[in-house]
Image (tube, rainbow, N blue to C red):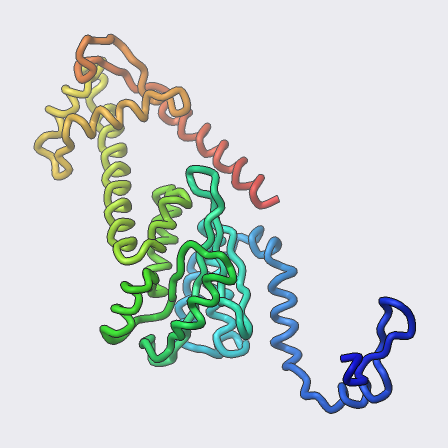
Length: 320
């Protein structure tokens, strides 16, 4: 710019615009101020947005609306969808931010895995009024460049839907996860309901079978949740008559129910409920075979209140 006479160097390492440079600058087209301010505000308010606790329905409704409306919320094309995707990932506990702009990926998502390693996924957001994203909407070159630029481990494309085998074959070949907005919403709801950790949720990024594996995990967690409820209810109903109950007793009591849990499943629930952290079941009489060790249920309501207190304290600490 010095050689072009746009800048001059009045002293070493100091630059200022020349008269010619100022005149040239005045001829340049200005960027859309609203888009620029949206980007600045987005980056400055990432922490503030994380502290907010928006209604789930509002959050998910905005995501679905933006998936079908590129100009949603009166913002530049695709910006609202990118922002809402980042918000949903932050809602689940990830570090996520909308980047956007020429030469950049749309959303960057990060988390720490079980080995303490920081993992990065990039998300290409595709808002389409037709509701269908095809391979023509995706740039192979751009995705590869964005992955390298962000040193990303995973890549995902999020849209309302995906049409044609070409994009699906491309995703399988490139190990890119295709995620619909509704799938992302369902996962966010299950993460909250079942207490999924980030490593478990992040399975969705693992193409080509991540979604099916995550669904299997969710089904397992839901069954565990149902069995805990069933076993606690059975303890409450039967303990007065039986005084104490073993895992084998519980197996016999529940063998004809719709859930029909295995003895191993019941042992796992007994083990969980008798831990020091939960302490709902107390060992009554130990037997050589663990399935014959008997337990009594105690202080269940007090345990619920204690766990709620701990959860509320952790949540408030996160929001501060």
